[in-house]
Image 1 (cartoon, rainbow, N blue to C red):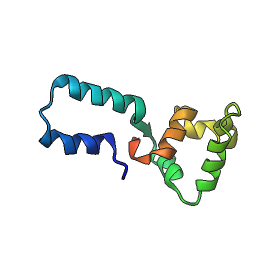
Image 2: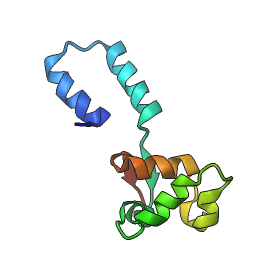
Image 3: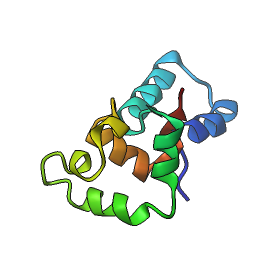
Image 4: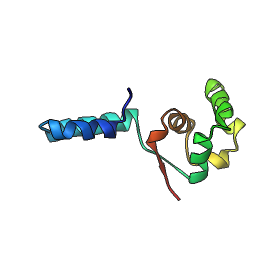
Length: 100
């Protein structure tokens, strides 16, 4: 069963004597491997929509082509997100923070 970095921290904190270095290390790992991705509500709804899964999957499958996401979906819709952030959010929607 996969858990998020936040869930791991919540489970470990009551059972572990934490040093600030240990907590900092886990925070650095989270920033590297599961960064929070801020997006608008419309972007979030698109990423998490079952109806649009095939379109996003097709775009993700073709990432070797330069700017495939910008070709497939209007770039203004995704601004200021990068292709990598869109893919990360699609793969791990728990990392999304809705803003605006």
